[in-house]
Length: 341
Image (cartoon, rainbow, N blue to C red; front, side, top):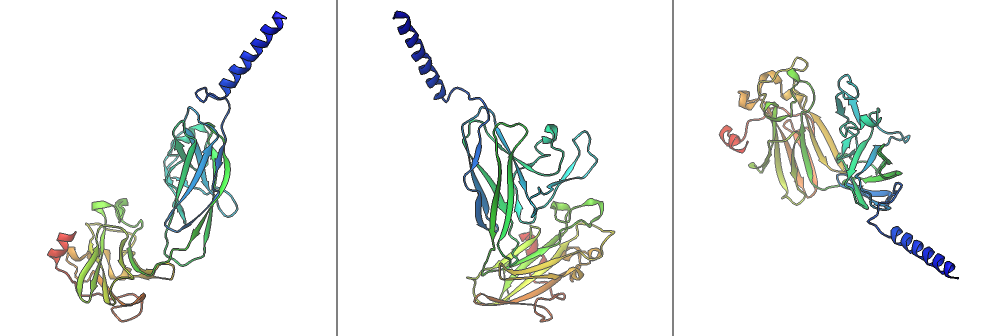
């Protein structure tokens, strides 16, 4: 009888110990926790960020890494990095590919060093999360293109990396609805790869300098001098009347090109989601002639905008509706513009 009692006591002790261990979160669990996506479809307006909420079964002692692939219409991962030089034992140089509808704000597989874990393809981004987390978020930025279009659907695949601290294999979707505005946005763009010595025409102090200026009833009211592309907005709440937009070439910074004569420049007028018009004004800006600051007074063209409520009529200086303009007289003084720049 005494032996039986001792045996029962031992069994009770072992059971109690096992129960305590199973419910003690301070003791590391074996295996890999599963990661669940709580919202597999997110709807946003273009330009907004889509946020996916993820839940980990239980915390682990090491960081969790999740691979993100943007999928094409057939469900295949899109290439996001391309070789820009011959790979050297997996450590070659790679260029980031620009996606059409989204921007993924995480390092690519290559930037994250994942070539050493067997990733040889050019797809995928890696989202890194600290150890001990049970709630995660993946944020995907959507791009605003201003062009009227139907709702777009972008599919992504979340999978475990080869480190396998946790397991996930999910396809999620972003519904991107059209951005609509009653304001008029003007954008001046001259980006590209056409300058000698590999100089980026939009990059810093060595770049080409093109500008936008806005006048209302003849008075200088706004400008965009330091971006590429440059951008100005006439708000739907701004007063009705006549606005003039000057697009000008300020300086070449001494740059030359053996491939082009005129700076490939476009000006875009858009009432986002409703109206979009792109105009080629390259012929106004011969690169060799320089800009206004270089002594070329012809490096400028003017468009007129007549605002009536939320209706905008855009004409060039030949009074042709949204067509290439001719040169215009320079407006604010050289000294005043230098102060603004």
